[in-house]
Length: 200
Image 1 (tube, rainbow, N blue to C red):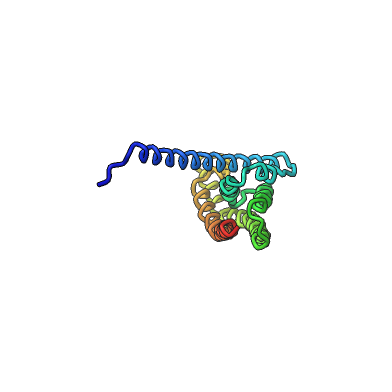
Image 2 (image 1 turned 135 degrees about the vertical axis):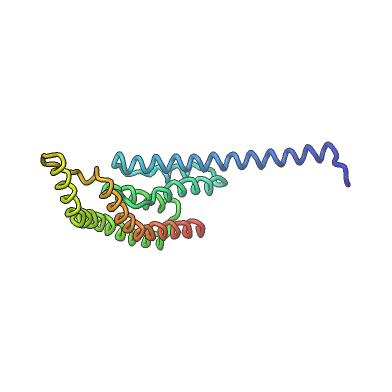
């Protein structure tokens, strides 16, 4: 076994400090990318303004740190790709698409994103129709419960469907089935974005 000299040990320590310093810088740059992505979304979605914050921050980032910066932006944007709850959420999806273009810049991803948005707008329409259909389907059961309660209480009773546990379970079961059907579109666009980002 070779005994290391003090010089060799000092050199090894210097190397590990350098690599630690690099990984700390990369981590901090990635975190800055995440922060910039959130500021971009806040500006576009909440304040309804156009923003070049990602583009400008990317230009100011040193070349050797750009990949880490892009990764931070990308991770934050992709995490916001979810099924919308309302039509207002489509604005967030638009902003995510624009932000991804800043860090990926891929024509195929752009096309895939347009198709994805078409599918998701169908989801919102389907969700409205599902909700009406669920309420109609459950209405006879609700009326039966109201009649039973009214008879028992000796006065007219109205039940709010959202307060009825049986309706809530029925509603959730049906809406979950719809969400599962459309979740594949979310999974696919995330995968397409990942592929395009890694090819860059």
